[in-house]
Amino acid sequence: MPEPSAAALPSLPPLLSRVDAVIVDLDGTMVDTMGDFNEAINRMLRELALPSIDGQHIEHMVGKGSEHLLRSVLKHVLTLDGRALDAMDIEAIYPSAWASYQRHYLAINGQFSAVYAGVEEGLQVLQSRGLRLVCLTNKPTSFALPLLKAKGLGGYFEMVFGGDAFERKKPDPLPLIKTCEALGTARARTLMVGDSSNDAQAARAAGCPVVLVTYGYNHGQPVRGVDADRFVDSLKQLR
Picture 1 (cartoon, rainbow, N blue to C red):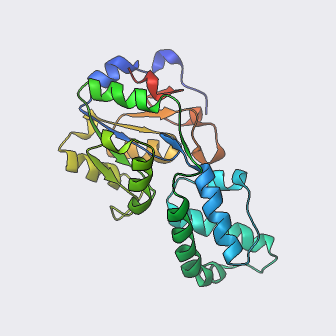
Picture 2: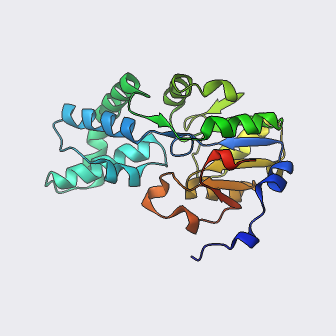
């Protein structure tokens, strides 16, 4: 898909002037959490006596919620382990894997991650414009809240919705629709800021404008090929 020309994209100041609130993604948008994923997942795999997985593979699996991530990891490592794999193999192991992963992730949450440069400055700019801020992530709420607090970002958001807050996760539009309802804002005046096609697809289907950062995960694919209103290299560019 060809990259949209700069002239075809609205500039950020006019775009921000047309919105009342901003929904911000977490992993890959505000915080680089790949180190946390790598550590927790490999601790889990060691506990289950399964082969390890490297960060490059994990990065391509992140973005559709922890349940999808864990099933993708299990499929990958069980294949490496030489097992004749079917869905029943994964589902048989999944409950113990999920319990182990939750325990390890909560134990290390935030220790192997870092806030991207420009994130706080960008959030401060949005606040200074009087925009209401909500964090919406596919990460479980029990993981997201302590991470935001540990990284000093929790105070910027009046609400935080994790992947377990609604019946479905991004790229389904339901989380954005429900978040706009919770804010009491019109979808067309509520901006989504994320890092992947999940965020963009959800925003488009919900009728929200969307800006994507260029440094996130996006399943290992170039983010500039995604249909979005604007791309930024840093949240500081949200001016």
